[in-house]
Length: 334
Length: 261
Image 1 (cartoon, each protein chain N blue to C red):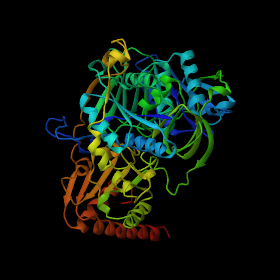
Image 2 (spheres, rainbow over the protein chains, first blue to last red):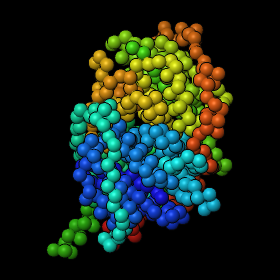
Image 3 (cartoon, one colour):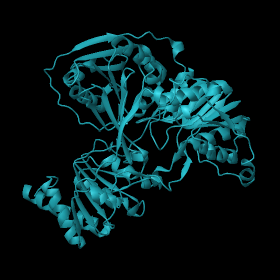
Image 4 (cartoon, each protein chain N blue to C red):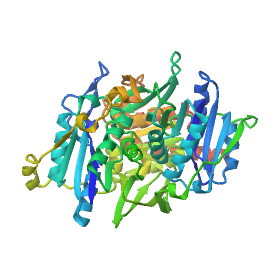
């Protein structure tokens, strides 16, 4: 059986949970076909249904008042008890910041291995082992990792790496309530305060179109042109690590190995040379257009369309042309 | 107060390149550095030392050449340096590494352990958290601010959509991010002295693991294969006037149905 830990926040399951259920179903075809989704929290019974619709054969609802808010001590112990009771062959977690804290603590308690931030998962046809592929050396090298003897085989996967599966309202599955044995004393770290981040931008991992800028843009002010282009196309803006380090864009908008992994329908890379760390975060985009003055820049090698030249006159003209096209559209409608 | 800082020597991955013909990593001439966020951990330890007084011990595991980052730690102001090195430990994964570091911490003794959030060669962010679990102490990951009052630490940290303020009692382990502080430079006076300071060497005759528990053999995870990504099929490269370039982009946007034809 493959178990997927599906993180919920304020009564909503994060998309990465559904993505992993989808991938687990695919993997389980080479195993026993069973996929168990696990959710932790307090008063979260309503969350089982969407997971069944996405194809989980069983949902374990781990219910306890001490699980109302995420806490690494309470969540590790609860998941440990669930894993001991259910004995999964494989355990997958989303590599959110919460998953990347919970995963190692749980793996160490289970005395098993954990492979972080996988970008591909497969089942070896012969050994039936999970093949976990992840980037190393800042994305320069890919490594396929196995966990031959210890169980479960554990992996974390970044949000957006796998696509969202089809949901089917007629799917059926088993729902089980699990009450962990938890004591107030088990919880040694106390969450004193939670502050919501104020976001000016949408989450770049969910944008269909991204206009991304690199150091070649030149300054913070010049990003206004990129914002204008993004707005015309109905997308958002993003940037490379260099522009985030310069303080031109907030960290939330960073694409790459140490930022977010994105796979939009369209990724326009402007003034980004395409360090391997950046490519690791965007090369699965459906269509890549790159504008760069250096024809030899690595980004030009992964682009579907690579335009060599000074970005500013090109983007200015592109904005102007798009506005014209839209105006014609509006006139046609009216 | 005794503070342990676990640091790792890593290749500067921003300089690692892939040989386009052979598809292998070119590591020659790539310099080794102290993992950047481990330096933030050391800085945090030194700030606590400046404020409250503490003995700061920097510990690394690796080949004998990893001594370089311990000398650097001395030059920044560390009080003591420990190198864990044993051929038996080669090839250890995060689980085994954290076991070895946990036992080392227990032998030396501590009130607080600081580590970087993650190392730039592996980016796993596992070792610090796993050390805490092996020892059985609380962990707070991704610190962006640390304050200490008596035996209580209060840490601010950044999660995906929130900031959390978390408190716990010593002893505990905190993993540090680059937003926590700006590491100090080495002091000239310390640089002269740092080469004369002693480095304690720990090997398996002291840590006493069974040889099947450690190194590649003891590691739950094994590398089955490594590869570099082959280059993607080259798309269209266009080198002309901005006007022509824009036409190429517009026709692509139309064929991808992003704008209407």
